[in-house]
Image (cartoon, rainbow, N blue to C red; front, side, top):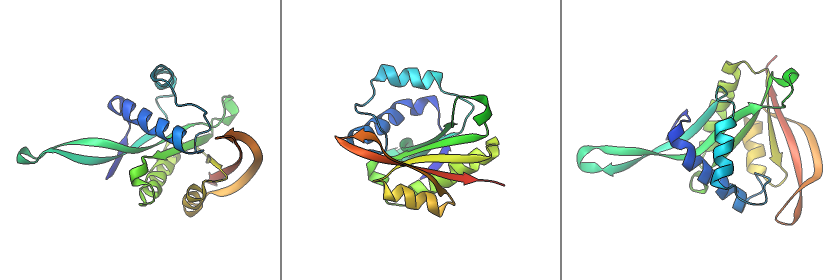
Length: 173
């Protein structure tokens, strides 16, 4: 697998991964999968200069001519932490993987690369919001030097249950 910058051709596959996560986990606190129209609006309005990476694997299409295509298996994106200009020194990471590659170490590699991209972009710190049930994400972030800086108990609901949200931060001095 390899990691590269996201492109327009990745839009639909990222949309599919995102909606699968909405349907099956509390990692994205939405009640319903997004419509294609809502996704396209987000895609068009996002800050295109910010880091947005995809994890891809090569899928062979024709072995007789060594032909292959890339399939997006995950993505990581950084948005500004808050809308106000004073917060422009801090980015917020979202990282999500296709179910078939979770638990294989690919998320850690993708997280490491988006951290590097955030630092190169000029962020002073990065934030991740992680739900209380997502212990794998907590471990992955802690291994990359993130520390827990906040805990908001029962601030959201997903699948009829209250959800705690934890803030993790990585800073450069």
